[in-house]
Image (cartoon, rainbow, N blue to C red; front, side, top):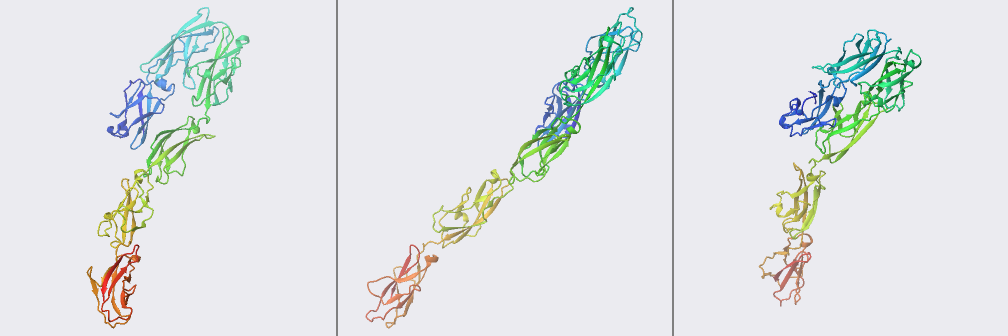
Length: 637
């Protein structure tokens, strides 16, 4: 927004300029929370903000003449910055002129000379009075004390300045009245009216009766700023109809109220030729025009003079580069910021005028930002698309200001904008399925497998913790079999595993980040238990109590190959650990029987002798594990 107030120049500090809270439509109690602060564009502090009342107050007494000189308007520009959300408001305060200065002449006494042969209508220019006030408070008119011979004439110069002249109305007679004493009064248009006076003494002289004449009396010259020092501005055309010394003219500057004496520092005048040249660099931005008054005085006795008025108007050239001012930058900005979020407030200034002072602001098109014009010479940098910290953690933003002059002038300023992370990425496992193997009977605390996950976010949003989920596939909770290091994802056993009880586990692992809200993902680790030879063979048939023997009768005439019985055994292990072989333990006597190594069948190996009515066999069953385990049974035949 842009607010506009006005305040008279003579008000005391603490004077209320305007109700900011009301004009901005903001609650007074929110001003402090939104960190309302005042920024003066001129670098001087003339105002303050009463946050409790929400009003703009004078901080110091204003002097319009000191602030703005002779400018017809006097405005102070302020910026109000509020946060949450970030907003910039421009305040323009007009300083109103108060009639606090009385007109004053450069000299309290003016001495003029006029020849007694001067014709009625002869004019004697007077010094103009000065009044720093403006408008109606400036000089309104002049008055001259009553005189039989002289009257007052007021001319208006091209720039509006009233120039008093004394006009001879009645012929003079030096022998009667050699000196005339008058009072010149300057009055302003204020209320009440203020005035200033000067004593005017006119000496009536003989002789030289033709004054120098400037042709034209008022002229204008156009001159480019920054021309080289010594450039000829103009040569005055002055004529004097007298001859000899009375027609020999010398030139000198005559100061006026338009920056009295200032132009004499910038221009030189050749007293003999009337050439006016520059003697210092001219700057359009400092002053666009100069009013030069020249006195042309002859060498007669008494001397006569004429006056030339020259207005030098400067032509602006593009000699100032634009200036970029970063009023406020919000860094870092959240990566989930919506399009249109204000990133920075940017001001631009160019001291040139016209097209030379028209400035365009640009940024690179590939950036996800754009410039929005807030009001004249002020822009907002806003987001124009989505941001992704994982693709770009920050941006070097170069703002380029280009004016419309010829040739163009440009300025650029670069600042870094950091993108703040939000938790928009879930952790991701390197593989959703993994396989691990572990030997049964491994000690509790044995490392089984390490899962690994990554998260492209940063900070707490990328701090990962691992946990095991229970899938209900085992009789007991998975937490009674395995645990996981929450920091590094290593899975350990909680107890020894038994292949014969559980051959494989499906272990769901969840990884979760520390963001708010937290995001997670899961992976499954298939843990295969590897068999160990921890079970001895068990004889199923014949089933006899421990320490007893199995008795089997066969015919005495059984021939070789006769099937006596079959030993049946099982092993709870698997693979090689469950491959069983049968054999007879060696004995002192040779036995007429043999055991089939693989099937466990006991057969007659040779003809039986009638003298031997019984035989005692010890059959051993052995697995193929390492180390090998065995069981045995006693057979009495």
